[in-house]
Length: 485
Ligand code: ADP
Image (tube, rainbow, N blue to C red; front, side):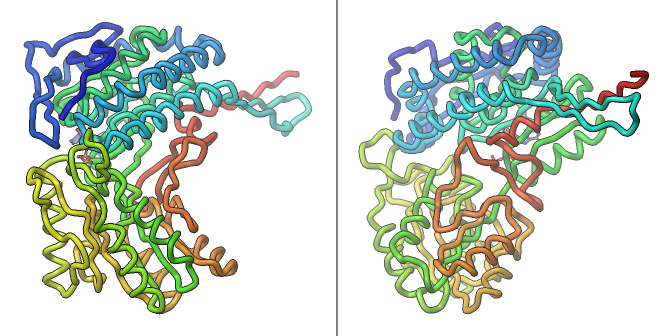
């Protein structure tokens, strides 16, 4: 279930703090396993508040020199980091598949996607222009400058072990901020490999540190330490709310990429094959474990039966297996808790009248593998409509009118990604404007790219990542009022 690396030094089992590779005080560790085989891959330090505080203090010490560099100097270092990520794409992908389970081709894709944020922000960092505002008096001039927020703390999830880090570290470092990172305990090796490459690229000591270990202790220190000016988080809405509460005490800036409950609407006039293809891409990528995965597929009456049939045909041919195995498209879920939730959603739906069209149970491979599943005749009273399933299950709901589709789509506290397929140009505009979501895929199932703003409304979060907007989250606006001219 693993693969030899061409550069074994990328597999780091220590944390990176203030430019040094270190263990936890007292030497405690946590084991990291391969979700496909259950084999232990290695250990990482189990750090807590004390080590986190030192990393934060190192970030504070490194800040003046880092922000004083020219944007171009920072850009050149980031560009080298991007180049190193791409040069080591195979090894980084192998580390990812080993600790996360996703098929190797998806891991390679994620490394390229992750690296693209470093490349993008290396460029954007040079364009954090200010403003000159026509003054309100002849003796005055008004100038607006943008400055780095300062020391940032990042907490990232296991579903995209590399991209969720670079999407934060890229704009932060480009803007002149320093950062302490806590990756998910399930996928720390991808994070530590990125730190190794950052070091080789010339990121100065203290500018980027990485601590692994206790989420509550590390998170507690990150959210309470007054040195930290910003906390950026990707993960569940539940933990996001907790972090927001904790950050309130020292009024930190926050960026929150939280849960979703994406609707995927198919109107009668949609092109059937592209809609099926889009649904598969959106639903089954990463075994359904992304916050933009289609969670509720809403299909209009006239095309419902044809859509269900075609989707089920395509899904029943998907290969479940170890991510290193040629041809695998669905890897394991991250752990047994994840499988239990998926199973609970399916059982609840079946008890309330849904039908299994394909899949519907744990895969014969055992472990945390689940069959890619299509459920028909699902209804809004089911858990699968209300909660994010985070697994390879497509529930298909039936609707009659455009108004009903919009009402169902917006009937959730979440508002991250949404999708719809249809050809009527008037409806395309109406529906796109009516969806209460930060992202709308129109006749398109894959919306992630470094050049566009990613983020949610409602309880899906605060702020945007990627695009020219993404760097604003790491900049403060300062207004200079010059008088006596
Ligand atoms: P998921 O359900 O996707 O695992 P979580 O929100 O539980 O999402 O976790 C995302 C990240 O938040 C992980 O790095 C995890 O370790 C961290 N985390 C979990 N609980 C806390 C907490 N109480 N304080 C700070 N970070 C936490």
